[in-house]
Length: 217
View 1 (cartoon, rainbow, N blue to C red):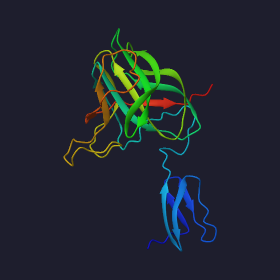
View 2 (view 1 turned 180 degrees about the vertical axis):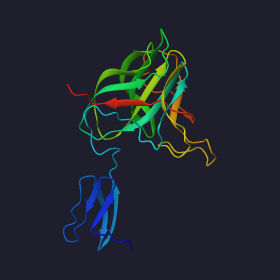
View 3 (view 1 turned 120 degrees about the vertical axis):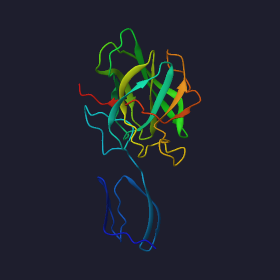
View 4 (view 1 turned 90 degrees about the vertical axis):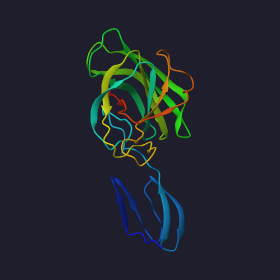
């Protein structure tokens, strides 16, 4: 039997426990209550709210680096954002300029742990300068996972999540060093994004850092 103290803290989520009325914060769902024994599941969100002008991406336990993304490959990372916000920017950071080349960005629905149907084809950003590149979107968050995706017309150096081999949202293929799944990929000729994401492959290198933002007017 597990007994719950008066207050349970995790990060910025607080579960207030009152033995007589069982009052809970909104982010928690009661599954079973028996005497003082309690089982519950947190309705997990990746952040405590959406703030203007901040960069939001996949929950990760590493820091940023740079890597080359290959031409004609879809790279996709899972992102979850608190519901009832409108994100109006999607972006990627080009590390080394490359003239007359492009990166296309977009979002896909989640389909049982893999990307499914296309939500938004955001268009293309040029890679002629080394800078943050953003496109205007209109995405209403639902509190469920989506997949932020990019595909490049040429091999291009971009800002990435460094491969520290210490975790990752997508698990591991084995317990062997270097087998952390950093993102999912699929071969795809550069162009408009497909309506349904192709069959994916596990990718264990450094994944591109694709972000969403809510930019103030």
